[in-house]
Image (spheres, rainbow over the protein chains, first blue to last red):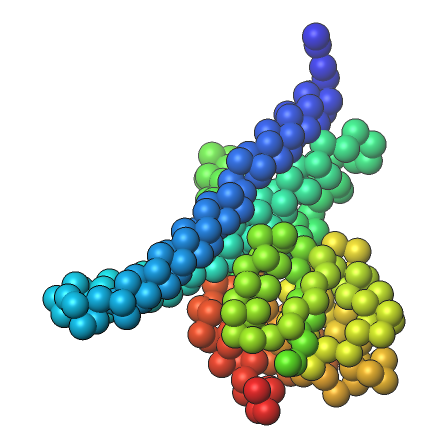
Length: 165
Length: 123
């Protein structure tokens, strides 16, 4: 199938938007977070049983009772770490999904077939989609590089044309 | 038991926050965006504190805070913003809208609970 150059670029943007949207579904770590919670719940149940065991063997087996107490302390520490890890995972996942949504939205706007090329999404339109300071910092860094590269190109063209060209 | 209204469009975030808050002894109500949050408030919910994201569909966190501040029942309710946004401009907008405090994701469960306790001294 043949497309003119404009339609071809629109199609590329539409395909990229769909592919990035597909990736978004795969980076969702909700299942991992739920597994971490289930793990802490089970550990907590087991810890309760160990506490009960320690209580029952307190007089008959002092050494086992002490080992149980150590295990309960270790469980508490691990459970706290797992809860923190699950919360961190959920937040990082949220951040990643929002950043990916921004890219998908931008590509979808660029894929729109009506409207003049260059007017569908300006750098300012793109910046308005951002959800974090990190994205704005990347935007600023790329813009600076772009301006420097554009300045070099202009200087090269002028030098090729020579003085007065 | 103080009730907390949690607003976030991420289902995983809502579940995570609910778990942490319930473990700490709070009652939790949830909404996936500002519009849903306002509907809960209009339905008679009177939270002791509101925890909201900024970037949400339909009604974002800043618009929600503005609307919540207009309602008599939540005019003085503490509102904590929990968001990926760390930008000064958004923070200023949220504060101007009536946000009480601001936390940037990722944050620690303890940091979140400390922020809550600072605004809910009786807990």
